[in-house]
Length: 592
Image (cartoon, rainbow, N blue to C red; front, side):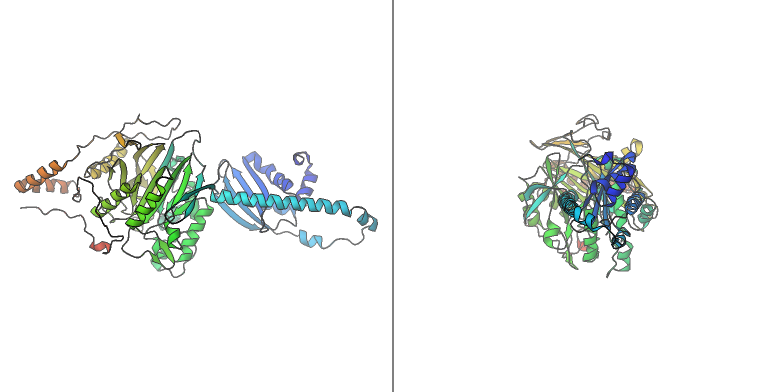
């Protein structure tokens, strides 16, 4: 129906005041459309008038909400009392924000002051027509309201009609349509380390929620981005200690994540364990309302174990998140998905034939260690053996090395990404993010060097970028097959090769970062290790000299690595001993 555009200003106002949704929509859009903003009106079954606002570039939210409320107040309509306003980018299914507002109206009072002096003849002449129009309007509003409510649920959850059988239950597939170029079959995924918007970062967010990710255009340009979230989004401080309260972040800070292009967060970590159920549930709900998915935690073990299956450009990607702890990860009615080898094997094997890619995230290890423990390598390699395509770790606060095992990459730990640590007042450090490019049967993986200044990360090139990549290559050289960056892996025949900046190009993607080629280090063999061991016994003085040189270069020695990657059989589901008793990386004693 297109009669409303021909209405005069007076008739449009009157029709909108009477509660006609099309007229209300045009009344609001008169001034919004010239700004590149459009609104659609419908009424929910709960009694709320729903306003769905779409825009190409996000406007100032507070001013937009105020304008819409002012326009609705002018109508003084009896059907406009409670309003729910939601906003999203045009063409996207992800809701960026949602507000509920109560409109002050005097229309109901005015309706009770009808005049009793109306002519009885008039009342008898038009009642049938009047009630017929009223009934039709009510039915139309009811049908439209049901349709929009159902549509909004689909938009909010971004759920498709597809299902995947997991080890514990059937899970619906999340259809992710907010991609850079839907015509390009290439999928780009981005992985960041630990994010904590509390402490000093919270002040940055208060000034402008876009500031933390302001210099990370690459994150926004990826089709799907994930970080490890280490703070709750809640106003609740119930039973929390003083130290825990310092990490509580205002729910509005979720805008920092949405503005940065974050689509998914890991919650299976030690910080989540420290909060009450309400804090966790608030966090999950706030993330969901903002269009951000979460995994690894929930009210029950089943919720915490539930993977996220996301379909992007026709390819299904399964995300799993585990927390490796020596504690039972179900406290205070909160469940964290703890690492259990049997469950991991079951989770991956059940999914393997139903999805295209399986990505496993681990929150594990020893803080400030540049090398993983032997037990971490056993778990990571076991995960690949079960059928995972990529293992990504975090928690160490610093970068750890990466290797290729059985034709699949293992990145043992990404460092802090945006982390409001009270011990680091300046917020300046070097780190990296991981970029994964996927085509059917082929993946390209690379580190992008990052410099963080005043808690703002930025991908860097030039000498500084080479320096960070060289450090990653150095700490990766201890593995039997170190991962060089970038590397292309053909998952069909398990071939892989390290590539230069012109290999594996993505058409039409000006965002591709050109990574400098690093010299490949020679692969170690068992015989090399044997010769090295024999030589060290015969040349103790030379060994002492080499170790002294390493100390002068501030290079800590790696753990003893088995060049033949063979996972241990019968690994216990949990680490029974506390972390403090785990075998740390020990430096060899110098022989004098």
